[in-house]
Length: 221
Image: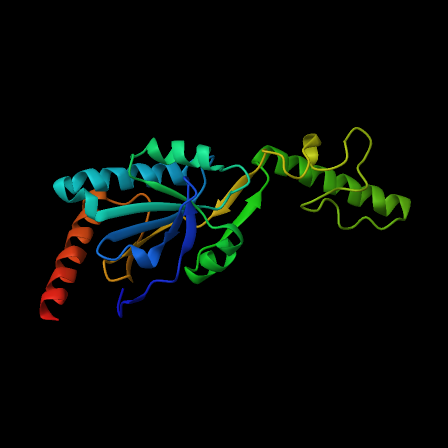
C-alpha cells in the first residue's frame, strides 16, 4: 500500500488473559485477521493458508506473527479460541477485544454481523410472509414480521422467538464478516492485504521483503 500509513491501534487480550498490543510487535511482520472459530469456510481456509505461508518462511518463520481477533466472543471463550488457533499453528494467537471490537474493526474498514443460518433464515421469511398476509386479512398491523431479536405475533404452530424455537444467545447463528488479512510491517505500518484463496508463497515472499526493507531503513538511520 502506498503511501504506507501507521496501522490502527489494536489493544486486546490473548487466550491466557494477557494484554496484546499491536504497537508492541515492532520488529516483526504481523498478519491480522478478523474471524471466529465456528466459521464454516473463510476462517479455516485463511488460517490454513497463513500456516502454509509461515512454513514457507522456514528458519525465518518466527518473524511472522499471526493473530485473529474473534468477532464472536460469546462462543469463542479463551479455551475454545486457544485450541482452535493452535490447531493451525502453535504460534497463532487468538484475541478478544471486548468493548473495543467495534472501534478496531471500523478502523481497519472491516465489518461483521450476526446472521441466522440459511435454513432458519428461510423459516423466518416464511413466518414473516405468513404474518403479513394474516395481518392484512385480520386488519391488524404486523408489517414488521420477524425482527432479529424476537417475533411477538407468531402464527399457530410456531414458538415465540426465533424460528425453530431458538432464542437470543442460541448457538444457532453464523457471523458474516470481512475475510481480509492485513499485513503490518516491522515498523507498525499497514503495507498489504490478502483475501483467500491467496498464494502462501507469495505472502511469505512479501514478509521477507518487508523484513529486508525494515533492516535497510534501520541501517540508514
